[in-house]
Length: 119
Ligand SMILES: [Zn+2]
Image 1 (cartoon, rainbow, N blue to C red):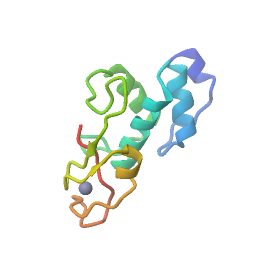
Image 2: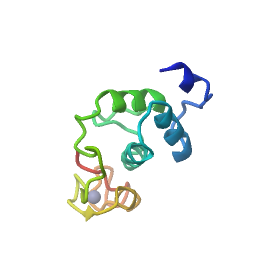
Image 3: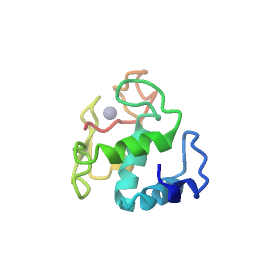
Image 4: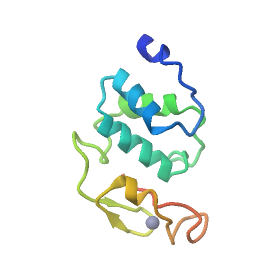
């Protein structure tokens, strides 16, 4: 983490608020649009990563996200036109909308969680 980011004095606890994520990404010279993709992606996963373990420190997850930039199909220099839920196949043009809706094929049970975007 760089000096500038440390000076922002964020709580690293999960979940962060979108504004925190955006200012942190901004300090890493990453766009607010990508910060949103990161935020809504993890919101949709309930802050669990793809391996199924809980994220305890969102700054670490953000660093990891930025480090692996380019490997993400979710964000390739611009938002995708269509996001697909990996559990039920529901499509939505907005990642924020997709991850705010209950998923009827969620692994925790029908409508027990939100849609999760496929990478
Ligand atoms: Zn779904």
